[in-house]
Length: 524
Image (tube, rainbow, N blue to C red; front, side, top):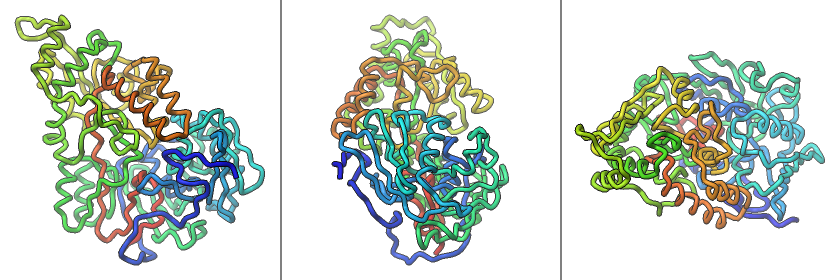
């Protein structure tokens, strides 16, 4: 057997295990209906061609992936019972579970794996996930061999959760546009633990137990009803009353702290480290004033991150010093943190020639925000920067698309933003800093228009080796450069929490949170 390379996500050559999930003191019970909430209506239910947790939460129940992850960042078997990585890192052999079928009874084969990877590569917005894949060979029905142009350390994570849904070739290979395929929302056929009963937009998604699920004895629940509740207060009331028994990705600080006091609820921040949501103050590095690193650093020294954590986030999250999530093995805690120092900020601007007028104003800037939860932070920036002579105009948008259009077209000075890491920096971090990803009109690309040849080189090096120690070294330097040039000022991770009634057993705590299969969830 070829030698297996170890990386962040590779634990061993061949892994065989039972279904993953936290240990429980209680014997799981079969049956019952879990009523949970999601916060918005997904565009459709097929994560193979649609990003986002609103699609991911129902999508990971409907579609199985090749691999699943536990809470310790260890890969576990799912549709792939085992895998082998070539010594040169240029191929990965996937050995599928025998006898697994789609919801319509058709067998899952290596042809479906190849088709799924091709579909995701062509249609998913995260182009880096499978960019190095040159071909997928299918020597037999239960074996797929993924060929790569270079070692790809993010591949294992890219094959898990909602990032690589295995979709049936016999349905999606009919020549229709995968993004607009009618079976993305109706009569959905996957191979996950649950099957679609009904998707009623703005109301609910109803799922029922897949009796022929390939993981024997699972799932425990008979049914999941996902109620679409967009209002945070309404979700909180529903959770407190027991009308809704679980909700994930909750981040409203006051409501989180309020529900912590409820003796009937479990409130947990566990399970979102791969999602990796980081909030920051982004700068237009081509702006008239924000093109100057001195201005950006002075602003960072005037924005009190600790105040935001205490007064706005109410202790529900901690600091983030870089754009890599603190829960990642690659996070570098040693970079400059830009602690509050008004005197230093003023001196920096004075020395750089930004003199104040008779009213104490050096120059004006705008700060944008695109959703309600961002408003308190954006409004805080105005008085904070007044202390260093910057006259800030807070600019809201009519809706999220309006904000996204403005920011992606680089029509801003500063904006509050929230971007996901998606497990591996190759997938969710590189896009923010790559000079090749400065794409007008594309939100969550390199909207800061930041460019640094060494940063590009470090991302290429870190993204083309499976050696975790080398990757840590490259990403440590990467974060040091970014902390020095500061195209954005990292503030804090989103305080995502899972709220669950104490009658719910095994609420998901894997690194993908509620964007992971709920086959081991049960009702006590």
